[in-house]
Image (cartoon, rainbow, N blue to C red; front, side, top):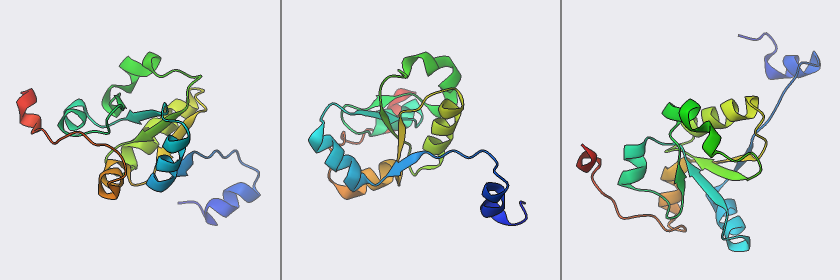
Length: 130
């Protein structure tokens, strides 16, 4: 609990940081301008295998430390999970380690799929990975 909330933190001149967060519509717009954008799915491998944005990369939040070298600090990544919780954790961890070019996709894969605006793989039951 922070008495006075976030405003009190800012008023005390404490350090803050932000992570850009965009809607699926904005992601689609940016993809139209640059089809080579890097979409990074941080869901578990089985979730990505089951259904994913065509062309997306997968680095599960669960294994961030083992795969951090795969994230190029010089590239911009549009990061999503299923709904937004894990992607924000992923972005925060990398931001603390000096990564600047991370953009969160609001609503995650759920919003992406519901929009119908991006190509998504056909569903495969994840139990086939067992």
